[in-house]
Length: 634
Image 1: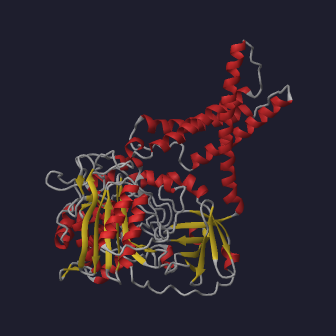
Image 2 (image 1 turned 45 degrees about the vertical axis):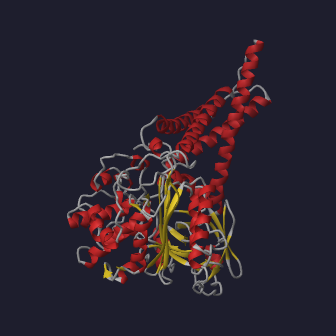
Image 3 (image 1 turned 180 degrees about the vertical axis):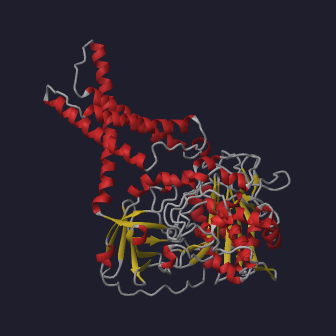
């Protein structure tokens, strides 16, 4: 479960950031611990819990650093950390077990399994939302609202109550079984179906079917008793300020607390292909299905990387194909990864939200585990298929946003340009470095250091994308559509011009304010100007949208502020609405006939009209994409 602040930050980041070159691998456990401690210190992360497994043997479980800063409490292998979205795989395991028992199937339709449960799908007649879509994140549903993230009812809520909080996001934005878009609600819905079948709470189902048999003795979905158990405190980025406990409103999506010892047992179970200590809890084929994506267009087009049943399969730039799932809650991150064929895996958790710490510890542990091993052979390079450039060269815009309210920014900032050469393709985002990919199939491409294809070009006319691109590398996957140069760069240029206009308006306001003060001090009467009223309205518009953006960025690190009706969240909504109203009003005022007496007055009026026209375009654009009017607490 990823926090809204991370979602907002991700809008301006590449959707497919490659791993950095791995550092020299630690050669011993002691060296690994020492280097992880250095990462914790450099990132202000108090502590970590770590489990490393080789085949059926646990070669390390331990704590590094502090579980609590004040008073100081060391982290140990029994310290409970929150594992966030790593929790989701237990929904998939439960679903596969119920399918084995004939109680449901992955192809069951949601409307049949949960009659009366609210969701909308314009393609339900031909492409219904199925259980498998909810687990593979191909339902097209929007991710959770900020309001539901902010819910912190210590009651805690039942799963049925939690799902009722967020029904408005359950709308398929495109045809199910086409695009991947991460959605926390999907696994929770499937967990609710399991509750209806088993007639017991999902937490009890998992305890009986998985935690106890696997040996996860202290793992729990509910808030653990810190008197009886060793529980890590979660911290803000400074590593000092504690984060209040978050009662996740749909616990199956990301609420498990687990120790390094618990996670070691879980990794043993996964590497054992559903068997632990000689006991078969799930057939090997079921585990393999969990790790395989089938319902997305990218999987049908030939990518073997992707999101399976609540488990990722990713290719990193060191040449390995990892099966994994990470997770995040406010103040805590986790990573579980393994190589089934090599029989090695690990899990670690940290008690801060530092993505830098997560990435660096991940690199260290993976390098330690794979030292001396030879990565699998890479997919062989093939000649570039004829006609690829004619079909797919050009600009691409993302079309599978995780949070619909942020699509207004993503579709402008995350555009990419694709250029075909004689034997490769270059993908260049507006911001960041270009990636060169090699052909390994008719439309399949991989980076030079990746073992398999991570990008495929598709014809998807049935879904409004005659030319499309699907990618799934080291980050979350995404779908893009080819657009004209005018559409791609036009929106970006207009956005830049509008931003420049807002900044210029603020400069005009400052200059005008100083000029007004000087005139008052000198007791000079201000001359009437045809541009005065348009500029005043433009200034109000600029100030209102500036306040809107500043407050939402300043509040993004605390979901309780933006997800509840608080002064900042109401300000965000009110300032946005004010920007729309003032922009429209200023457009009416500015473009009425106005007489000017001097050349400078005419220039000032024309400049004000240009700024106001950009404001009107921006206001209508932001309203169309549902940013203006967004009540973040609703």
